[in-house]
Image (cartoon, rainbow, N blue to C red; front, top):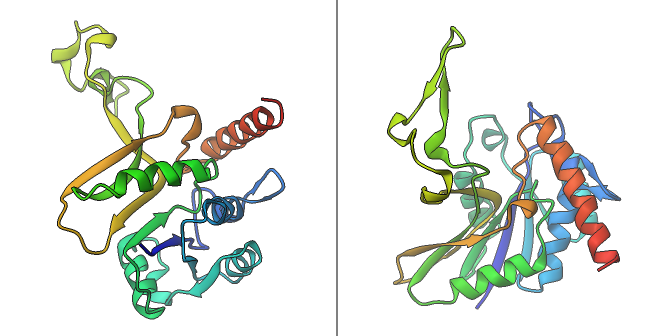
Amino acid sequence: MKHVAIIPARGGSKRVPRKNLAPIGDKPMIAHVIQAALTSNLFEQVVVSSDDDEILLVSQQAGALPYRRPAALADDMTHVGPVVEDAIASLNIQADSVCLLFATAVLLQARHLHQALELLQDPQVASVLSITEFDAPIQRAYEMHDSGEIQMALPEYFNWRSQDLPKRYRDAGMFSWWKTSTTGQQRRGLLIPKTEAVDIDTPEDLLLARALFEFHAARRENP
């Protein structure tokens, strides 16, 4: 089977400016994602779709195929779906599966991709999403009003013990991988440990990602 990875990487992020190029260890963040994809040896192509000259240059230097997306697909409101579809159509990509990799998945390792492909090879499976467990039971979440007053969003769970509540999961912000043609309909989740999944939306997330990256790098050097 032929697999292709596409990494959308817009240049105009606002909450964390230039986050796709934020330095992590010895290289820009997106270069780590490209390296993981290439190291896996699973993809015929690793494409970076961006509107930004520097991102395209860094991506090319890291070994990816840079593709300049149209300006109409580079604003704050554009979803990743049309970005991926544009890259596939414009580059005439023919593949059995497409893996959407997020440019901020700095903790991504080749082994995660191999584990995901193993799930995807099941004939009943149409797609695989990286997921991770919520840090705390979402059933015990609180709401805060403008006045500062708080109340449980789901008060029926007030007397439940945390360990008795069913686990819930979130998108790990690493990848979504799907077959381009399949009779299967299942969507599987690849469970990523919480210490290996950081969805970078805020400066605090970036600090945490850097700390976890250094932690895992030290473990690999001193197993």
